[in-house]
Image (cartoon, rainbow, N blue to C red; front, side, top):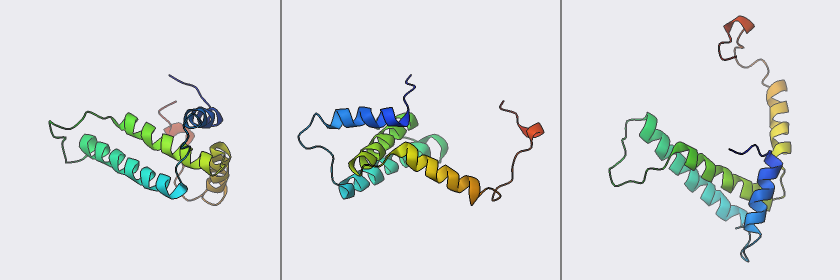
Length: 115
């Protein structure tokens, strides 16, 4: 198990991609790959939680693997555009904690069961 930060994850992916002459794909090609990986994740979720069981001939991919593939391509896209994913996440969390702070029904302290 890894305890990498988002920055470290971006560095690991960049180190991997940097060993190839081709480097990062274009942003448009990576968006297509991101869409492809999202479709593969949707297929796995549908197999596990939906009404469509896997065929016996299909590979035994897991939701975890598909999320990893999706995350890898997302990091590639961010790296190619010089976007710090941690900063992007901080920005969106600030937005959720301000603009959307009263949008959802909060759990009262007494209702929390997972702590």
